[in-house]
Image 1: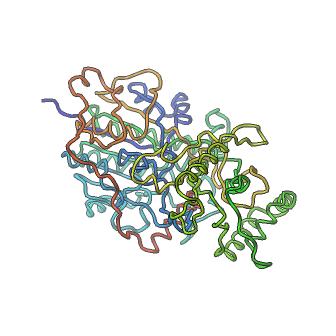
Image 2: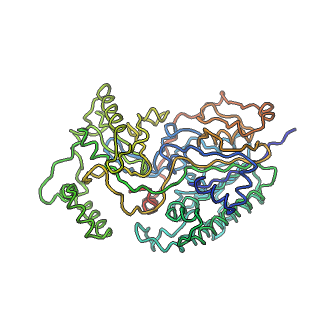
Image 3: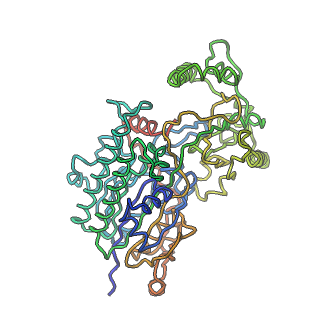
Length: 560
C-alpha cells in the first residue's frame, strides 16, 4: 500500500523572484536555492488586483474573485456611492476553505498565519490565524486551548506601526528599529513552526511569513543597492534578515523530513512604488461622463480647495512653499469641514472612479436602480458608456513620456466569473505600475508627480511558486502559465484528495513524474455540490476592533 507523502506549504507573503533569485545567486539564501535546484519553479500570476485580500481569498477557496466576492479588505454600499468601503472581510464569508476540504477527506492539518483566517474555524488539526486578526482577539486559534501553545514572543504582525495607543500615518520609527522588529517576528514564526512540525500530527502544514511583505513595502528603495552589492544604510541588517529567513526555511524543511513534498508560494510580487498620479475622475469629467457639484458659497471649503488646486501655477507655488506635513494637515482640515457634502452632481454623472488597489482602478457606471441617483439606463446606453470608457482608456498617453499608461481595460465580466461580479466596478483599468489612480477632482492636469509615497515598495502581479520533494520532477528553467488558484487544486492532488468540480484552478501536472500521474490520475469530484455563494456572516468585530484594524491598514497604506 502506497502512503501519501506529507505536504509542507511555506508562504512568503509578497515574495518575488526579482529579489529572491539574485539573493540565491549571490549565496545569501542557500537553503531556498537548493530546493529550487532540486525542484520546479516559476512566476505565479496573482489576482486582479494583486492585493492581499483578493489573492489570499482566491488561494483559500481555489476560486476567482467573482466566486468569493473579495477584491478589497472592506465591503461597499454601492447604492449610496460608498467608494471606500466599511466593515472588514473575514473567514466567516467563506462557505468552505482548502483546509476544510482536506479535513473532510480525513487529512490532519496545521495552518499558521495565513491572512483572512480570523476567526479560526474548526479543522481536523489546529489553526493560528493571520493578518486581519484584531489585537487582543480571543478566537485566533483552533482549538481555543491551542493558544496556550503560543509563546509571548510570537507576533502575528509587526508593531512598529503603533505610536502608543494609536497607529502612525507618518513619522515611522528609524529603519533599524523597524528591521529589528521584523527579524524578531520572523525568528519567532520559525521557532513556533518548527516546534509544531515536530510535536503535532499533520499531513498538511502551512506557514506564512508576513515579514517578506513588510520588508519589501518599507525597504524597497534599498533593494537596487542590495542586489548590486553596493553600500546602503541598512545593508547589513537586510542581509541578516534574508539569512535568517533562509535558515528558517531550512529548519522547517528539516523538521518536515526528506519524505515530505514542499511548496512555496506568494500572493503577489513586488516592485517600486508609483511615482506618477493619474486623476481618474478628472479624466471622466473631460470625457463628459462626470460633473462636479456646483459651489455653495464662500464657506464651501471643499469646493474652493478643488478650484484653487486646479490652478497649476498656484498649486506648484504652494507645494514649493508649504512642507508636506502642512499640505496634509490643510487637506485633512478642509475635508473634515466640508466632508458631508457630495463631491459630484450625481443626476448628471454617468461614471465615477472606485479605487481598488494603487494601479488597479475601478470605474462604476451610475446605473438607474443600482445607485441612489442613477442616471444611466440599463441596457444599450449602459454598454455604450462602458465602450466609451474602454476605448478612451486604451488611448491614454502621459504627455511627460508619450507612453500608454493602461495595460488592460476590460468589462468586469471579462475578468471574473461568479455570483459576485455584479458587486464589482463595471470597468476595470490596470495601469502601468508606476502610476496610481487618484479620485480627487483637484488635479491641475490628468497626470502629476506622486510625491513622497508613504512606502517605497508596492505589489506586482507575479508572485513565486516553487515545488520540491520526492514526487516532484526537477525541471530547468521557469515553468510558464502558473496561476494562484492552480496551487489550491495542486495541493489537493498532492494529498490524494479529489478536486471539487467547482474549483477554478487546474492541477499543475507538469510538476509530477509521468509514471506517478499515470498511476494516480487527477480525480474530479462531480458528486459533491460546491457552494455557489459565500455565507453572509454576521457581525464579528466590535466597534473598537473595527477601528483598530482600519488604523492598522491605513498605516500600512492599504486604506486611504
